[in-house]
View 1 (cartoon, rainbow, N blue to C red):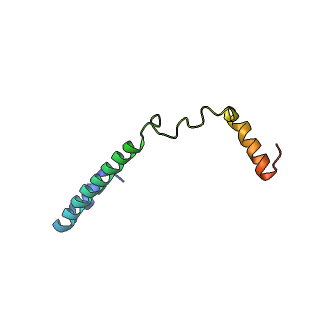
View 2 (cartoon, rainbow, N blue to C red):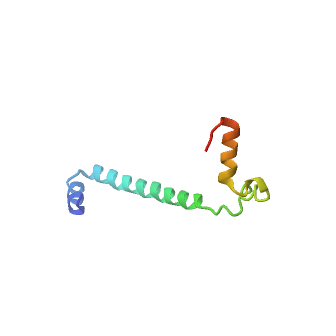
View 3 (cartoon, one colour):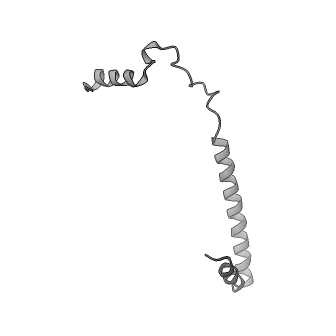
Length: 80
């Protein structure tokens, strides 16, 4: 949508409707600003999470693909 068309459409609205458009734009700005802040918060580093490295000393999991194939074979009788 062209900006001129939007401006013309808003200009042709009654004053009360124009105020509602301004209020709605303010609402959208607040909403999307919060969404961006939430996204930034979610992008935290995993380095300090307690579950990282919990299996690092397990020799049976040094090759996770092989370990998983064996588990599947034992549990489901799957062959690879």
